[in-house]
Each structure stands twice: as structure tokens, then as C-alpha cells.
Length: 257
Image 1 (spheres, helix red, strand yellow):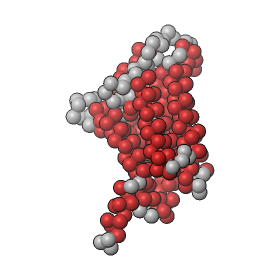
Image 2 (cartoon, rainbow, N blue to C red):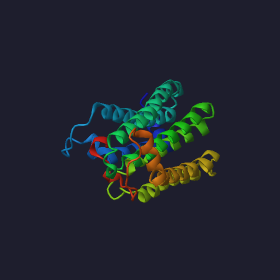
Image 3 (cartoon, helix red, strand yellow):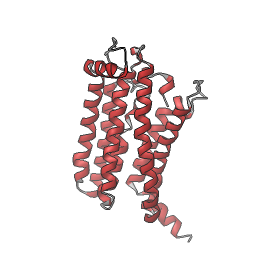
Image 4 (cartoon, rainbow, N blue to C red):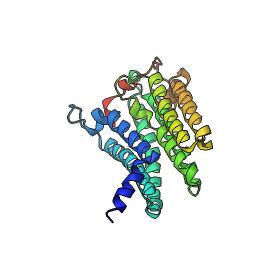
């Protein structure tokens, strides 16, 4: 027993997916520390209950991702499979809550276009839908562990911009996209170095995430999206909205879960 524990720790220390999930969790904590995890220390106003639920669900996803990586690294595959269905439930909540909160905020802030909630509706919806699509593929391919684990990691990377955009100095669109691309390419490079080949899922999946996020953010910032979303959300018809460069830092405190 005493020799088994050090052996498992050695296996865990060499697990690429454990460290990738731990890195993602660290980015989320750093990005949301001021506005969610440590918001009391920074004198932030109390958050609505719905945002606490959303924050708890997102936190649970990243914690579960790290735990699942630990279970695989230490050979506990049956428990990993069982907890995988918990992950499916969390993923459904991430997609539905993410879209619901974004729509609610956009409707609430229609008279205040300078808050950028129409942009965040498009950007947030794109991120969670991309996350949901990649995770659905991961579930469908769960018996192909090599493809499954890479799809789960790509799905997680697709929702990281929400946290990256809250890091100091990364509050506008271009730095967020570049930082997300660097994170994705770092994962691909390390995995390729370890496996001595580029896995096909990373070969097409990483470019898909980067290109999809780029076009989604560009579209969310466009006049066409602003006009369409405003017409869709407002019974009174289109309202004038600013479409200048939108900054993540401008996101209202009540949405910075």
C-alpha cells in the first residue's frame, strides 16, 4: 500500500491532461477572482442567486475535469465513467444557463448599449454552443479514449475566453483571442511532443476552436448582429447601439460571475 501511493503520484505528475485541466482551472480562478471567488475582498456588490448558481456549475465543471484526469491517471476507469454522466449534466447546465443569463442581461441592458450586453449575448452564446458541440462529439466517441479526452479538452478551451478576458491587460477582443489561441497551441504542441505525432482531433479541432471564436467575436461586434439582436429582443423595435470596440472590462458587475 505504501509503495502504491508514490507510484500513483508519479503517474499523476506525468499526466498531461491533469496539468492541462489544472491550468484551465487556475485561469478561471484568476479571471473571476475579483468578481466572483473573492468578490467580498474587493468590495464588489452581492451577486444575484442565478449568477451564484452559474458560477457554481462552471466551477464544478473545472473541478470535475481535474478529478477525471486524476482518475484516469491512477487507473480508476470505472469511477471515471460513472462521473462522466455527472459531467454531461453539468455541460447541459453550462449551455442552458449561459444562454439564459446572456439573453436576460441583453434584454435588461437594451436602454444602455454602452454596457455591451448585445455583444456578450453573441459571444457567450457562441462559446457555450461550441462547447456543447465539441462535448457532444466527445460523448459520442467516449469509447475512443484518444479522441474523447482531446475533444473534452478542446470543449473546455472554447469557454476559457470568458475568464481570459477578465485577466489584467486582456480586456479587449484581440488579446483574448490571441491568448486563447496560445493556450490551445500550447496544449497541441505538448501533446504532439509527448506522442511524437499530431493527433487528428487536435489537427482539426484546435483550428476549429480558434477560427470559430474569431468569427463569432467579430460577428458579435458587428452592426448587423446588434440590429438583429435588438429587433429580436425588443418589442419596441430596433434601438440605436454603439458598435465600437467592446471591452470585456466594460461588462457590468452584475454579470461578472
